[in-house]
Each structure stands twice: as C-alpha cells, then as structure tokens.
Length: 286
Image 1 (cartoon, rainbow, N blue to C red):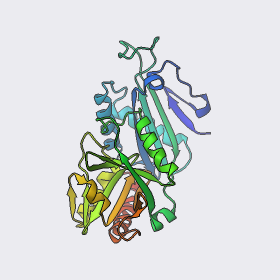
Image 2 (cartoon, rainbow, N blue to C red; image 1 turned 30 degrees about the vertical axis):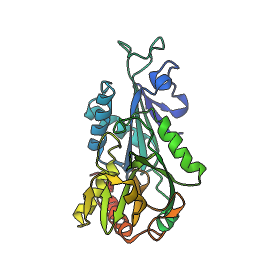
Image 3 (cartoon, helix red, strand yellow; image 1 turned 180 degrees about the vertical axis):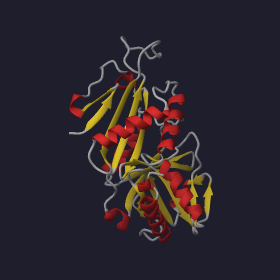
Image 4 (cartoon, rainbow, N blue to C red; image 1 turned 90 degrees about the vertical axis):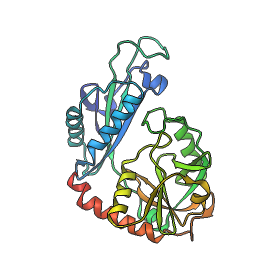
C-alpha cells in the first residue's frame, strides 16, 4: 500500500481523509503539480515548484511551504514508496470552512496532499505505430496557464477522445491550436518544428521546454508562434508531449492521416534525443 502525505502526516493511502467542507471538494478551489521522478531523483524540481508558485499566486492562495520544505517532503514521499521511477502529485486546496460560501474564508488552513504513483511510460506500440486523436473547440476558461484542480472541462474533452477510441483531443480556439486536453502539441512542417507560444491559453509544460531545448541543441529549426488550425491539420507531423507520455507521434487527426499516416523522421530524431537526455540528465537528477 502506498504512503501519502496529508496535512503534516505520512500515512497509508487508505487512511487519508479530508473534510467534506474542503473547498477543493466543493469548488475545485486549489492547485496541483505533477513531478516525474527518475531513478528516485525528481526531474527539474525547481521548475515544477516555480510553476506551482505561479498557480498559487494566480488563484490567490498562499504557498504553505518554502522550496526547502517542499524538497524535503517530496524526497520523503519518494523514499517511502516503491519504484525507482515515480510520478509525484501535489495538491493544495484553500482548506475547509465551516460553511459553504463562494467567497474566500478569512482564516482556514490549506489542505496539503502528496501522492506517489508508478511512472508508467507509453507502450512501444504507441511510439512505433503512432496514436490517433480527435479535435474539439477549446471551451476551457482563459487561465489555462494555471495548474488548477478544477479540471472538469479537460476531463470532458479527454473523454471525447476515449469515446472515439483515441488517445488525446487536440484543442483549437479562434482558428489556432492551443494544446491537448492533457498535453502540449507540436507540429512539423517542411522540417521546421512549430510550437504554440506560452500564454494564458496553454499550460507551460516542462516537457514542452525539454523538447524546445533539445531542438535548439541539435540544430532543428524551431518557430515558437501561434499555429493556425489549417497548419496543424496540414502538418507533416504532429506530436503530443507530457511528463508521463514523453513524446508521442500523432498519425491520425479526426480520422485523417497526419502526413503519410506514420511516425515521421523528425519525430524519430526527437525521440532518440529525448531518450538520451533521460538517460544522461533526468536520471542524474539534473
């Protein structure tokens, strides 16, 4: 049984309980972060904690811990759970009030929860054959840069993909590609990697950063700019990225082939670079 952290205590997950008046339960009022751990070393923990701070500031919730304490707690969770590769989930809600009121309570303690699960990467078949996706209008709110726990819109969009037998839903807003329901999306056209820019309409992914860094390090041309829907639909290659999915090639969008309907040569290069980076950098805790 896995060990979790809840409000100052480490305990078996079956013992973890929160109040029915917790604002995370009632309103989705909180923030979260997901940190991949390789060989028991959290990857880019400073960047993940910076993104957590950005979200907490955006929802006006005081950070319950400084970075040193977060590092200690995450290290303890990793040590108490099995597996060299883990996915650590942090959740902070505004806490439990004595009554249900949309306005922020004056004085309540935040609820802090940390969970570790096995870090499971995609099966080889998804990399070798590619994945199918669908598209949908991006109907989410205008602060998608905040990693807030109120994810109902993302869940509904992702479920559309599941219902269609697909892996992900690619989102378009006002004629431009934003991201996936639970991932970042890249396009390749004429050998150039196209990446939607970081703004309030997409989550600033840590894996997104790694892909752009690897492209720059290996001389792959990159354009970070708005990607029109027509460009995405006519791309030679499409990729989805996330901390758990790593980099995956998209070969179908709405039932139509992307490029020639097979994982492309630029993806093959990026995947090799990414795996080398994971072996030499991620597993070294850098």
